[in-house]
Amino acid sequence: MPKPTNDEWGKAHTDDVCALLRLTPRLQCIADRVPEGARIADVGTDHGYLPAYLLQSGRVACAIASDINAAPLARAKRTAAKYGVAERMDFRLCAGLDGILRAEADTVVIAGMGGETIVSILDAAAWDWRGVTLLLQPMTKAELLRRWLTGHGFRIAAERLVRDRGTVYAVLTVTAGASAPLTNAEAWCGVGLLHDPLYREYALARVKKLERAAAGLRQAKDLDSAQLAALEADAAALKECVKEWEDANGTGH
Image (cartoon, rainbow, N blue to C red; front, side, top):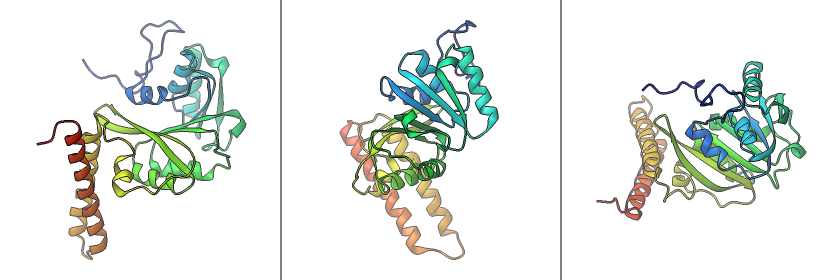
């Protein structure tokens, strides 16, 4: 049986207007971490599946769906109408949080984009982050995002891993607050994940990434010995984390 396409995810079991919306595993993982009764802003909403689901399920009282482009926002409006939540969802055409006031939301979701883009959105927002729950799901550069957060007045309260279409992603729950500097292994592979069943798979994927970068550096005309040593040290640290996970979960050899 072929896998659903991106557009097929989020379709209902029937053609009824208010049939229950289904989410991808990645979006469901985020939805499960939204506080009950939250006022949510979904930045870069695309099809608007997440806020529509949260409204339809009664998990949130209201939702703002925002996107920088008009076409995805139009798709979100169609989703909201189809699932009977259009009157409870607000739509904003804006970059990041530029068109959303702090008083309008206590939970902000930024998912499905690169870590660098998430950093730029947070860095540009003139918000008082106290009392705000951030749910962040980077598609790339998660290590850059984690380092930036802990260096700019944020605390990674929890992380959860989820596999979606063969790739493991991290979902970060973040709040305002002081945080100790991350180890390199934490920056690459997350905080508090050593007992997550997907940790080994997630960590090994990052080991391969570091080893590929090191191999490429060795072939460079002007070898940067310091950078190479840093990559090799990070890869070794992650392998130790994998061994710790295997020992803790009874899978070590």
